[in-house]
Image (cartoon, rainbow, N blue to C red):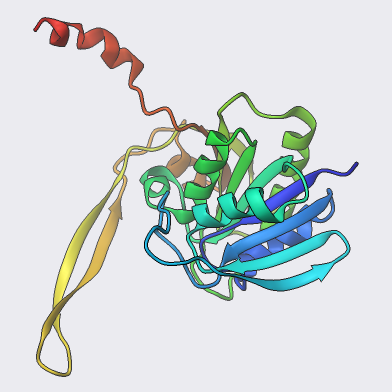
Length: 254
């Protein structure tokens, strides 16, 4: 039996990135796509709790079932697993995201939120992102990377409770130097809410910001991307800082 691959994203079911990802995934097995009906970027691990969730059938053909969901990327994943997949998926893929999900961006990303949720459900999962925000971004150079990593994970699996955060530089295929296994860079978004006035004279605020990563080390994702490599960061949902368990022992002396 061919593998069953479940695909979602946060840019929406019609985004070019998810279409490119689906095209590659179909080379490996049966595919179910469940993606947001509208852009759901920056939704992280959020769930829909106060309104009904509706699902629209987009495409049905041999080896492919595609749906659009009113919910978040995590809603899409959970709904698909419970109600739309013919059996338990062998692999979950998310993306290809329009824009970076390296470093601290993983905390905000709906694309990566779905990946993290997949690990809690026991699925091997990979999130793919291209460092190009345009709706018309060219995803062809990303497809050989997707093909290689999907093949590797299907053949070899992943460690328990571990997923992969894959970011691809905005380069032609010939200019991508290779793949580097990395750690997550230490960085931050320095946010700023810009005050504006609407046509009725009422104030509102619009989120702006600047991504800052000072002196990324050579083993980090930001360094790899800046030097023409695809970054692959193993991630998991256990936020425990194990060294701190030792250094904070005295906190128990109550």
